[in-house]
Structures are given as structure tokens and as C-alpha cells.
Amino acid sequence: MARRQQPTRNSRTGRGTRAPSDALPAELPALVEDWFAGSARDLPWRRARSGYHALVSELMLQQTQVARVLERFRPFIERFPTPTALAAAPEDAVLAAWQGLGYYRRARLLHRAAKAVVERHGGEVPADDHAALLALPGVGRYTAGAIASIVARVPAPIVDGNVARVFQRVAAREGSASDRGVVEWAWREAERFVQRAADPAAANEGLMELGATVCTPAAPKCGSCPLARECRARKEGRVDEIPAPKPRAARRDLVLVTARLVRAADGAVLLEQRPREGLWGGLWQPPAAECADGREVAPRAAGELLALPETVALRPTGEVPFQTTHRAVVFVVFEAGVRGAGAALARAGRRWVAPDELGDFALSNAAKRVLGR
Ligand code: SF4
Image 1 (cartoon, rainbow, N blue to C red):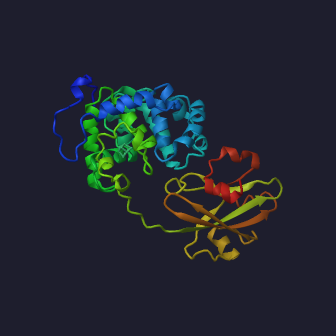
Image 2: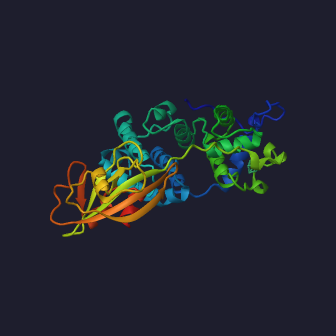
Image 3: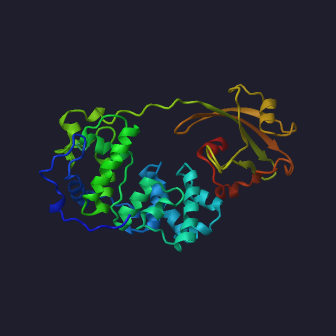
């Protein structure tokens, strides 16, 4: 997507034009840009704009709260200051630096994106090339639009939950933000919105900021909203109804049998690496296995599920519940002390890890809880 000539503010107010009933008012970009100029939060990735900082922060922010990303962004950038440094790092080091952010699949995609940036773009994130951004691993339409518009001022549209909510309320567009028709409408409106903006960076980032800080899902601050005069949901008293709640996905509990095996000689614990795909993909944990028969598991059956030799005398220690975004997980926990080196237990994919080495391994929060850390 090429950069375009910037319109003047007067030419884009669009006053006098009649919009279709669910189209957004033409003056929206100007209102958002003016508001953002005086209301932008001071966030570390806004201080020194770069395609790399935007790529890292956008991937971190995809499913993690801003407060948590604020803690992890700076240390991550210090550890991997450039795409080249990130691409050259071993995957385990990247996963370890990602700890606390969850959804580790994003860390692996970011790692692959850095490698692609080095191979295809000489180590520079192609912030002004929307198509090249879209071709990077882990970069979808939203992330490509955010990087291109915010870093290079390319008029590329963005739609995330915050943007869709603001649009739906301003236009009093009914439905859930995940409805296909709403999503397609929001992307069309986002395209029109950014094409009318004097500064695509301020317009898009302001829109995200407005959704995150003013037009929040619950208790939006309509009294201090720059869009209050335009907002149909507010005028019609329907702010609480729009957008409609997302239909709930059916939840299925997951029961995992797990064993805390501690080597008597040095306190090392036995860990295994999870499969790369799926829940906690690629992270380390005490040996664990899904138990289809529920939570009543005898020690012998647990040992068999975990492929442990009969000589390991497991003792039950209770349950550890854990909630992921989509599932309730129950760990049925056993433990045992192991005499000697325990070499037979450290087979493919499992290894003994001394207490002072644990920080080098990316553990899921669930595994930390099972280990009592
Ligand atoms: S007036 Fe209220 S509902 Fe409408 S956009 Fe502003 S904060 Fe959201």
C-alpha cells in the first residue's frame, strides 16, 4: 500500500455529505486526531518509533494487558535490541524472555518474523510496505495496519476489539464484535476512516487509545469523549447494549496428571518440554499427561500415564486448579523423591534441572504453580 498525499483538515471534514445510516461520520478522524494530540499515554514503544519496536509491542499486546507488556517490553528490547539479535538467539532464550506474557506461540512467531526480516529485508522491518509486513510470520491484517500506519504513516486500516467497539457505538451498529457482518463492516469503515485522516498514525493510534481508555467495554466515559456529539448509541441510550456480548464457546475441563520428581542428592526436578503446538506449546513442565477418566487417579495408574518406571513410588499431594482463557485445567499432582542420578528418567524430552537453572527454562504459569514457585 503506497503512501498518499495528505489531505488538508478542511478538505476532510466532509460536512454536508449524507452518509448511509450505519456509516461513520466523516469528521471522525479529525476529532480523534485532535483528542489524541492531548491525551496520548506515555508508553515506551511510543518514545522511539521503529518498525522493530512496533512489531514487538504489537505482538506482545495481541493477548496481554498493557500493564503486563509495560513490565516486559523494555527488558525484551534490551535483551534483543534488533531483529538481527532476535533472529540469532536460540528459541529457548526467546521463550524465557517472553515469560509473564503468556501465549508463547506469539514468541515463536516473533522469532520467525525476525528471521524473515533478516533474510528478506536486510534486518530492517519494512514498516512502509504493508504487503511485505503481511507476509511476515505472526503479522495479520491488524498488526500490519498498525505498524504501517503508526510507524510510516501509511493510510492502512486497523480493526481490533477496541476499534470495532467505538465504531459500533458511534454508528449504533448492532451485533457482536465477532459477527462476520460486523467485522466486514468495521474493516470497510476503518478503510474510509484512515483515508480521510490528515495523519494516519494519530488517527489509528488515537482510535485504539480511545477504545482502551474512554470507550471501554463497561462504564465508558461518555462525558469526556470527543465523539459524544456524533455517537448514536449515546444519543439513543443504548451504550450498554452495543456491542452485544460474544456468544460463549462451550468450555471443556482438562484433567492432567502430573508428577513432581525431586532428586534427593541435589534438589533437581525432572522437567519435560511440551509439544510445540497447542496449549503451552514448547514450554517446560513437570511430566504431565491428560487423564480422560477424570480426577480419581491411583498412583500406579498415574505412573503408567506418565510412563514412569514402577520403582518410582508416587504419593498423591492434591489438586492444583488453573484457568486458561478458554479452559479450566485441573492438575492431579503426585510427587516422589528419587535416589541416585535418575538417569533412566531423563530420557528423550525429559531432563533434570537444578534449582539454580530453573530460570533458564520457559515454564508456563501453570507449571510454576505445580512446582510451588
Ligand atoms: S460517547 Fe460513549 S459510547 Fe459513544 S464513543 Fe464516546 S465513550 Fe463510546
